[in-house]
Image (cartoon, rainbow, N blue to C red; front, side):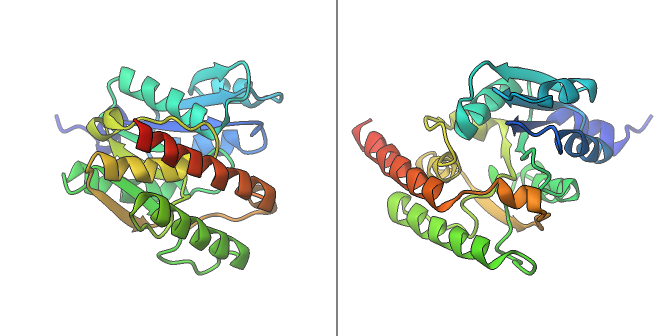
Length: 236
């Protein structure tokens, strides 16, 4: 008897969803992924004070909770370790604010399942039509900073939509705790000589998802943390 393709996807792919006070969007995010045949979902409730955890649990996600907010990097680190423990063959990271389109996930999986890549980044900048100008500028600056610190160019260093083979995920060390984790992941692909590809994705911009982006102040904090991360890497 031939197995359904979505059943095969479900058994080998685990989606990691870091979430902090995302009760407005978490249900829709989980249901959208379910419609793609992705049902192995890990939601990391990163110290939320709202109903994020309860809603995620009601939708059938595996729920992990941080008592205190540890930041995006801390949540991703917890989720990736849990996905590896579950025996995932491919791990996808997916933001909880509704910005990512679940329909883009198969495009990220293809290079890994074909053996052409170890890490795939969903890049909003390969086709930025409809992307707010301020976001384009902020992303370009982040890309330049990532290049200067870690010596590799990517068109969307801050993308939260990524896919990793289990072997690649197991080799990466996530040491940062905040939003700087996105650039750290790029640095880890270089350090571990992982094959990286980018595929175009379309972000879904709403007033809510835009409010979740980095402010100028947070951007400066992220830059300082990236510099500290670079110094730590030099001393290891």
